[in-house]
Image (cartoon, rainbow, N blue to C red; front, top):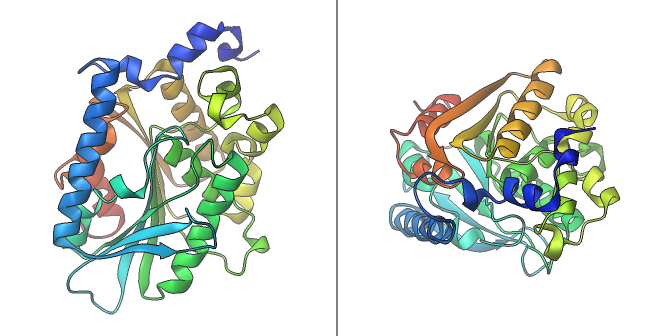
Length: 293
């Protein structure tokens, strides 16, 4: 029996409530501060980049992306796809352009992807959407010298699901040069027993087929990913930290090129907020991965 299965509901709810673990401020404060921070970063990105907003990648009204391009693009440039967090039920691409602030001046294009958050969307739909967004991006933007993925929290789960895609069902097989998984959840079965599942309404069957830990063999077969970074905050909850370490260990055992980053003096929220700063450790790692260090 897993350790989480021995917890009662209130213990599980606390373990899977990132706002309760911040060392900086109270729960409501840390969430409000997070929204303010990523919004401000996105506004800053709009001022320095050429932006294309609401570019469709599918037929659905939520199936759109925002593109942040360098002002002067060479023939080819690296492209980073960013998937936002918010427990699959909060935030959107509108607050998700902040990664462009340090990357666009280095000649990197950044794409923020929307997906149908709960209760409007369900887990199967969200996973399908982000997979299709990658296919659409590489079809629309042929001048990509390298394709990179980054996701935070629920977005890290969705990036891990992209890495575990059976691309034979799609028109193309993307070559993903690197992936950054930041404070993610890779086994979503425990979520069923928490408050988080109220808008998601997942059954165990849905959670199992959308858990990256259940799709490791598919990842090994289909992944073209050169390099993966699994990052977790010092002040993430013990369960979030365990999930990150377990997923890292699983990837390492598959022979993937993967590194584990335990980021000191960060919580679940500022671990990604700080990526607006070009000197921040994770930003530096990302630039190095892209050869833009």
